[in-house]
Image (cartoon, rainbow, N blue to C red):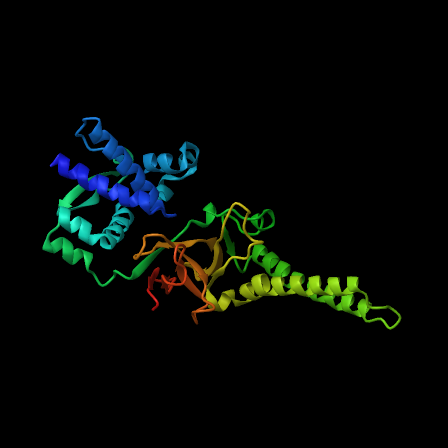
Length: 326
């Protein structure tokens, strides 16, 4: 049985390495497969187990693991997400595993967590049966499940750090008023600047030069960027409920972020910075929210980072699910 298990694990590990992807489950599985195969090759038959903390250390480093709260660590990775990734990969190479008759899966101990009851993960294989086939052919094969990141984990720009406390902002508060003031004063101030600049250029006694044309072009370009990617999205937030966060809001260390408006249990309007991310059921890459245009009518859709126009999904912020858009 060990020989079969090694063969199955090596096969999947080869597929894993041949198709690298930006995905947390991919990184964790890579560690599990590498260490398990290495353990078997060294003559040990004991299962190689990893806790979430150990996986975090192996993937992101010790410092990052120490900074993460235990509750957030539970959301960082789980056996369901790991097995979903395995399932998607196996489906793409189904004939190969059918020949072997076995597929790998991630097993875990039965614990509710807590001090001294840490959840651990290890790799095993199981025989392909009719029940397994049925589980692999569910109605959710083309559905992506999104996860919402902790707002406190999103790095903000220095200005918005003072407005968004721990990544959240209560709209009807002093900081909320400050945010509205910044928004409207910026728009009004820029409009006033454009108006005054235009008046200066159209003075009767002033000649129109190439330098003036250059400044007008720059002014028009920056006005377009400001309104399209900053003012208009923020204006649409109360209606759309989720928008892509303007780049001026987040730190240079962040690739992207989302801005969400919701009501808390006390019916207060809250705006928070977060990230919605899922795993593509077709290619197992990350799915992130992006602009629906030009190929979709919806303002935001989930796009696979590896195939953004072929693997496109809807987005429901309430159910955190999305169906593939044909």
